[in-house]
Amino acid sequence: MFDESVQDAWRKRYGVDAPPLPDLSKFLNHRSVRKYRDEPISDTLLAALVAAAQSAATSSNLQLWSVISVQEKERREQIAMLCGDQHQIRDAGVFLAFFADHHRLRQAALRQNELAEGLSYAEFFIMAVIDAALAAERMVCAAEALGLGICYIGALRNDAEGIKQFFGLPEGTFGVFGLCIGWPEAPLKAEIKPRLRQEAVWFRERYESEVDTAEYDERMRAFYESQRMKGDVTWSTRSGRRVDLHHMTGRDTLLGWLREQGFLLN
Amino acid sequence: MFDESVQDAWRKRYGVDAPPLPDLSKFLNHRSVRKYRDEPISDTLLAALVAAAQSAATSSNLQLWSVISVQEKERREQIAMLCGDQHQIRDAGVFLAFFADHHRLRQAALRQNELAEGLSYAEFFIMAVIDAALAAERMVCAAEALGLGICYIGALRNDAEGIKQFFGLPEGTFGVFGLCIGWPEAPLKAEIKPRLRQEAVWFRERYESEVDTAEYDERMRAFYESQRMKGDVTWSTRSGRRVDLHHMTGRDTLLGWLREQGFLLN
Image 1 (cartoon, rainbow over the protein chains, first blue to last red):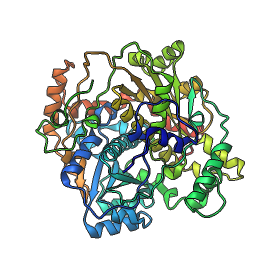
Image 2 (cartoon, chains in turn blue, yellow):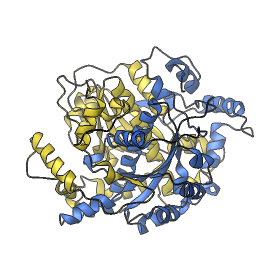
Image 3 (cartoon, rainbow over the protein chains, first blue to last red):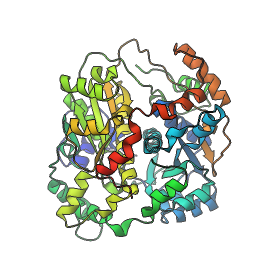
Image 4 (spheres, chains in turn yellow, orange):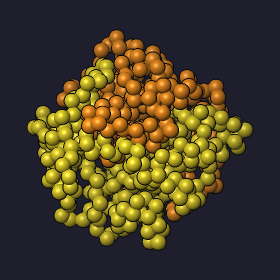
C-alpha cells in the first residue's frame, strides 16, 4: 500500500535525491490516512498492536499510560463529535484514545503505603505524556508494517472535560491524543508530506539558532497547490496562523483542567 | 541480535502463551541496551535514522522538535556527567538529545508578522513534547529493525539549566530526553522485560479503574531475582519508591525552569 522506495520517500520528504541508504522504506513511508475500507480490525490484530505498544520503552518501567478502544457505533459517532467532527474517526477500523495515566501507579503505591507525592510535579506529567507517545508510535510503526493506515487525532484535547465524561476517567488520567487505524482505501490518495531539510532540525554538538525556512516554504507552497489547498500559503504563513490566539479550539483552558484532574504540575 | 519469535516475546512480556499473531517480532523485541561494541554510527546511517524520525506524524506539520547529535569524545564525557553518569552515554555509537522546540516556529511566525501567542499555552508545550517523542520512537523502531540497540535517557531532565548551557539552547527549547544508539555487544545480555497484562492498560469503551497488579508484582519479583537485582521487591514497591519525594533527581524544579525558558504553560 505504501510502496515508495526509500529513495522515493526521501525525495518526497526533502525535495532532493537521497544518499545511499539502508532500506528503511517502511519507516519513511508514513502519511496520515483518512479514508479506510469498511473492514474491522480483529481483536487478535488489535492485541498484537497493543503488545507492540507495551513493548515501547517506558521510564523506570512505570508504564504511565493507558489506551481505550472505541468500537460501538454510537460511541464512535459521539467521540467524532467531541474531536472536531472528523469523519475518519467514524470510518476507521478502530479508534483508540491514548492516556497519560497516573491513576494505576498511584493506586499501587497507596496499597504499599507510599504516598506517590512525586506525581504532583510537572516532571511526572511530562513522563506520562512521553510514555503514551512512545507506546502509540511503536504501535503505529507496527500497524504500518502490516499495511494498515493511521491518523493521529490531536483534537482529543479540544474538550478535555467532555472526554473525561465520555470515558469515565478517574483523577490522574488525561487523553493525550486519539489514533485512527484501518485498512486504507485503494487507490491511496494520501501523499508523503515534505518536511524541513535535515539541517533545520538536526544539529551537531550545539543548537543552531539560525534556520532558513525559505527553501521549505517554497516546497510547501508547491505541495499545498498540488493538494488543491486553497490560498497562497507557505509553511511559515500557515504555521504562523495555526499558533495565533484564534486557533486554540478549546485547548487554552487545558492547564486549569489538568490541575483539577489531579495533575498539579508543581 | 534481537531474535525472539513474536510468540517468545509475547510470553516474556505477559508470562502466558500467545494467541496466533502476525509477525510483529521486530516491534515486540525491544529492550534497553546499555553495552555496545566500539563501533561508530556512520553519518549516512544517522541521516537515514533522522529521516525516519522526520517521517513521524507531527501535529499540523508544525515540526515542534529538534535533535542534536553528540560525537566529540570530551563532550560525550560531559553530557554523561550531566545525565547521572550513565556509562552507556559514553559508550554508545552516538548520543542524541531530543528537544521540544518552539524556537524555529516562533522565528518563522515573527518573520510573517504573526505573534505566535498560542505558544504560551500548556497545549503547545504538550504538543512539542509529543512531537519529539513520536519522532524519537520512529527512529528507535527503524534503528532496531537494522539490528541497532537503543537506550532512552530520561536523566537529560535532571539538570535542565546545565543542558541549556551545554547545547547553547535558545528560549523555547527544552531537552525532553536523550537517546543512546549503537551496535549491541554480543552476546546480548539485556532481557525483554515483563509488562502489565493487556487488561491492565487496554480498556474497551470506558476506563476501568480497578486494576489488579498482584499478578504482575509476582512476575516482576521473579524477573528482578533473575536479574540479580537486590532486595525483595515487586513492581508496586519499586514503583512506589520511584515516585516519592526523595527520588526527583533535580527534576522538582522543572516547571520554574520551563517558564523562565519561555514555555509559559498558561
